[in-house]
Image 1 (spheres, rainbow, N blue to C red):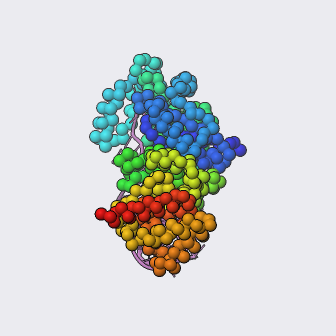
Image 2: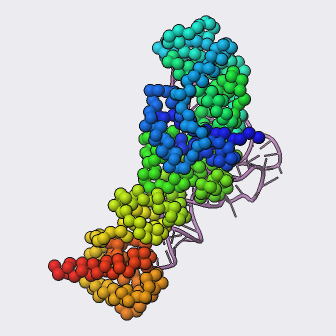
Image 3: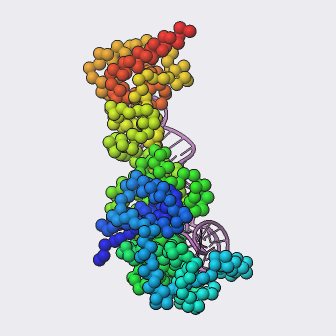
Length: 467
RNA sequence: GGUCCCAUCGUCUAGCGGUCUAGGAUACCGGCCUCUCACGCCGGAGACACGGGUUCGAUUCCCGUUGGGACUACCA
């Protein structure tokens, strides 16, 4: 049994988007599951569209996701000699030929064919001319005109194509670079790729590629065409569907493992299980459980999964991902950060939420939300806060249980319900009316900060009642 | 237009001939819990596109219709 070798071959004409990431994930997961290898290859034969910025962006996105590769990145642009070698082989054996039809006349013919309601395929003008190379010539593959080609797809089953539907595709452009279908085949052959998992938008290309494998006399890899990810209007994903780049989700406060979980679950299932860690996915992933119908990208479900991952990760795991967002709120302190995170996990759907929610822990001075202050920091509560202050000063410890006892005492003495006391204290401590539990907050902040914030609140009440 | 793929709640899906008065998740709506907000828990509404077959029996198999999608480049 040969080792599984999969690959991910993005073309560097933009960022890594959600759909591409999912394809990468499937290939990566399969390789990791099987103990095989995962190869990264940059398909940059289209010089006009490829940029090194895109390459960087794609690598950055893969790294963030934690998708690592065993070989590469290979660049097709650096493999021209290899393609030429294979092309020469095909020309020598008569399986490919030079063609001097100009793009203009081809375009012309395509239009008239279409207008007549016919299939716009190459008419074979140069097929039997026996032309040799000349400037501007391209190389075409001599495609069989009869018979059928069967794609044995591990996801879709056998798909039969009539060879007469296929035409003599160009395999080398007039500038000497190979075209996609040919480069892919040569690369996959020379890189020993034995498992090709890709979007089903490639299913129609596959018979051509199979014919190329045959002409080159190499065995076929296993093909698996996964259904596409669709936008909210059920069409192919594109920019107009909103944020589609992987790094955009990073920047919106998503965890890589959450995006992975969501993306893999979109099109693959494991019974009723929804939540997976990356290790679990590696363990459980298999081609058999990939569905056959296209799925719609649903940001709401992604958000829910993200919240779940935030909830079930340890503060230590969350910390490095949270740091950049804290920085945006000018929080650099490391003090009691993990404890603070713990109090925010069940109330944060994104890391941005969490950073926002954590801000009050680290402020020197609390600024009160206007509404909160006018509703809860009123003169009649001043005495209660003062009473609390005294009790806290003398509290033996500052853990949640002790704190709760202090409040119970205070409730008995004042006859007030917890809610009546907790909200003003919450405003004093956080500036607002929404926060983690009051005892949690206090024990995280510690006695000194709590006391000084209560003092500040009392002074605030005094100064605002003067006017 | 041609070729190919696809079709279970709004969405993601389980289901691989009887277990389905179709299960889970998400979103939505109630309720409980409760110091706020969440989390959690309980409950509700919500789907097998349609028509033919095959079969004792179809969500499950076959064909057609309809609908959606992809491809149809000297893009990948």
